[in-house]
Image (cartoon, rainbow, N blue to C red; front, side, top):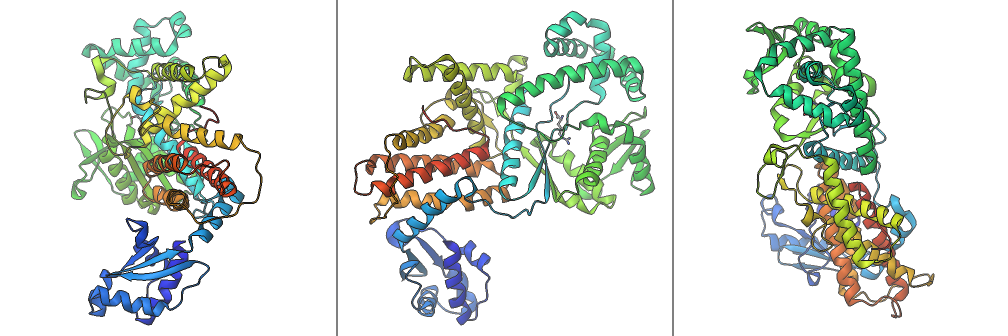
Length: 563
Ligand code: ARG
């Protein structure tokens, strides 16, 4: 609708010698706080200086230049002080919108901004031989949603999992396994055993030297070291994939850090040739102090490589392979300086695409006590345990409502609700904020939660199930709540675009909640079945279902028909 208004305004503005394009005008259009002030409004303050007139005067003048707006779209256009208020032909607007949603279904709101160009979204990236912790859960949830949103806007999203499968910690693990490892334990519960070993070896400083030697051996391709490393990797990956399957998250590419370990020499050579390297206490560094970014360590004194070197090499290889339009790293905010260093080194090395690399950082999960969640009582929190706890809470809720539900249905539904609880509990917050990870609150069927939003979908489904009415719909004068719902639905395309621009799934999450709330108000004030407006209201309920489903899909959440 904004496009139509922008068109009308563009013409009128031209007549007072203001040249703005439609996109610029659309950005200025506001939604008035109450419906008596129209459906959209255009504030004129910003023109005062240029036109050397009072904003009120300008509004009157532009209104006059608009002349008779097309009756098909507008009932009226009025001024109110410095604002020009547009009153839509609401019936027509509602009819068009609902019709569009019902015919386009899941495609409603989709645009082709990306023209199938590639965006790499790197996310999750857990570390091999360590449990999949809560920090990686956040990256998994947010990164997955960002990739979904990019796809919706017409890009080809490459979902990349940069496994932490190389680095000095493997020296520790190999040494640890030599000292405390047991094959039977490894077979029985690999992740638990590997963690045990890792904790033990980290207890004392006296293992440090030997660990470094093991890592050097690994980098030099020692057979035994490599074989063990491979076993650890396979066992971990198997475990991670199980988790992704439960969460409904997929990847296109699992190329981890280890793949870049052999290209190190080349990178070090390249940076040397480009005059970027400096010796500092025996190590090779890039000095980024003049950019306020400290120093970036490239090669250690013993010749082993580093996290940054692997990242630089990985970025170059990825560009070669994908020629990405953008590359988004969804990684904790604590690595922000680090990524700025990596991007800067790439830029200094002459890679023009370095400016298209983005670190989309996230804040921490906190416990209810406000302290960092993962270190609570010094224990690692396993994602598996969190899932299990959430699922069992969901089951309790479901059984209260459906005491005789079959076991299979119970399992299926509980999982969907648990995922909605966890994903939504995260995504409703700004990515960069720290959030309190509180499963009991997340799982509640009331308030700003995933299950509440799912519940309003199920409620809409149950209304539709009660009727066989297939009549073509006719729109009568709209009641306030109907109009509010129609308008909210019409915002969906803008909401997704905005969340893409800001890499902020929270915009969609918050929208879903507001939409669900308005739907529930509509449902309480506007009887559907048996009313004069039945045909339209049924269509409106169906349109609501469709858009809520699309929105939740972008967040990685499934809908449920009955709840
Ligand atoms: N595996 C790393 C960690 O757990 C995250 C990897 C982030 N991505 C990257 N390209 N460095 O901290």
